Image (cartoon, rainbow, N blue to C red; front, side):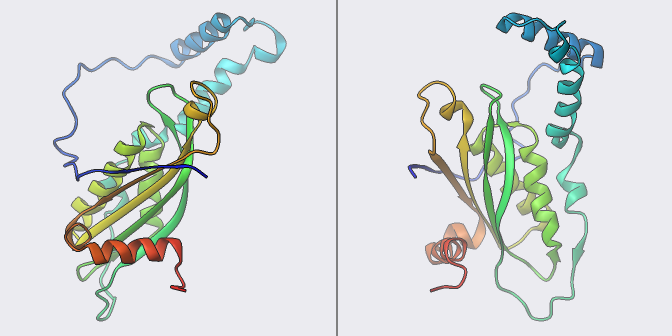
Length: 215
């Protein structure tokens, strides 16, 4: 499988969002009307039996697919646990499956995320790491931004000694349109703290992701 690998510096999530003019959220009826317009535009008839209820189904599906806009990382990562004995090594959660939608063409991207962090006295429930991935994936995204958002949320809320993220995904906007190249995997990575400062810790992270048994 071909791979496109991208590595980029940390971005402070509190400063990364440019100020843009807000827009009023349309009503459900307006959203359904927009869906009917698109069906007509592509050349089909939204009044025929098979498509009559499609606008309602699409809007309902979008509520679930893009539910990440309703969640906050502060709420997801609000509870930690301190009974970890003298544990002070890295925690790795790998192969977290996700799907998202490219913000440029609104085509799906499907992949897996691998997350590691060095806790300081307290750890977070493992399912919460997966929930953070899911929360940001369920928004219109670029893979680069998805990577930085997950990293920043964990870094800012848990304040660990370091965070490492690697995301691998296939983009349907590349497979189904444009150059139409199927099976191309895009890989993005980002690091903070000890992972950023110590290349050996990056290597250990990659080894644990690729071969957790260390063989």
